[in-house]
Image (cartoon, rainbow over the protein chains, first blue to last red):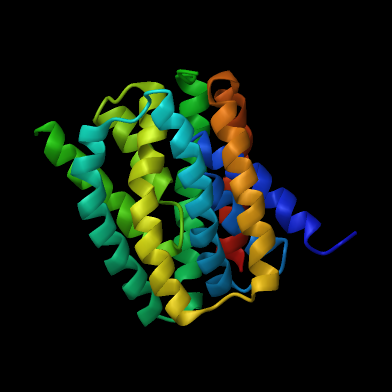
Length: 125
Length: 118
């Protein structure tokens, strides 16, 4: 099997998940670091870059279908972008191994809340 | 609290997670938009993607400054992600998201345990 096929298929599946709002980027990050042997910092950079075309293309469809809430975007995006910049700079300032356990807890929180939300209340779709 | 303030707090929380962990901002932002801000289902998913996009742009710039992935490693992820974006955008209204969330939630729990034991 050609070596790019597995990463391509992993990105295809998680790209679709991302555009459905299911959190594909996090899934890809876990796949890369735990299964595909990508070094953590490199995986983070790839994951962020991966999201750009995925989000750009899916937003084209979402906008066309009238699913975007512009007011929410105008309020949330500027402060969120500033916080992302601060978070990324903080991440660069510490050793990557220090972030593994907090990231593990973050995944447990994300997994539990997603699972409980889907089982208890069901989803709107 | 006003909707504007809720949006700002939700955006900041999602942005911080996204920058700190190199992804995952949507896992914070989406529940806040749905449960706290009471944004309608499909609109919340699509708006979440739109809010996360500029966060990823600035975070990616910072991460690239530190670690430059080789093009040979990078391109399958970018091409696959773009193809996945087309697939996801075209099938957005037809997907049984609840089942996907259950599978995805289980996988995240597994990943979390692996990271904690690493």
